[in-house]
Amino acid sequence: MDFKSAAARPDPGHAAFEHELQLVCYQLLLEATTGETPPALELVYLVKTRTPQVVKVMLQPAGPRCKERVKAMVRAAVDGIIAGRFHPQPGVQCGWCQFRDECAAWLPVRPAERRVA
Image 1: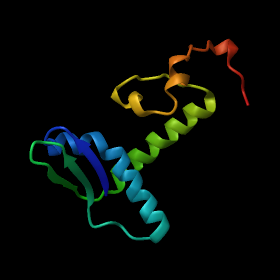
Image 2 (image 1 turned 60 degrees about the vertical axis):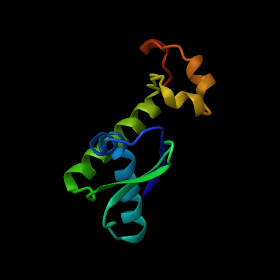
Image 3 (image 1 turned 45 degrees about the horizontal axis):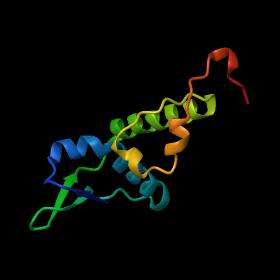
Image 4 (image 1 turned 90 degrees about the vertical axis):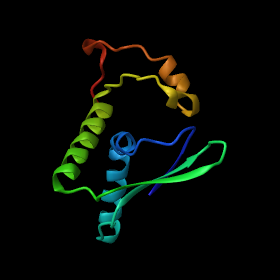
């Protein structure tokens, strides 16, 4: 389960797509820690409308194929970090990110300049 805030009622399909990676990572961590699969993956939106609302978006737990896809995405991210590949993707999330200054200072590194650890 994860809590989100929104200015408008979320579209369940879009919310599920947008947060699948995060929710499946939570599921994998829970399974690795407890050995149990959660009954559902859940987003709870606190909607800031004139009359505040709480909107729940429920998803089925991830199956083997989805979990393997997420694990592959995590491995690709780790491999990229280790290899020094980083390409900032500015967006709304930058407003509250503690690494905003580092991203603003980012310059691409040519392969010949890259250090191998």
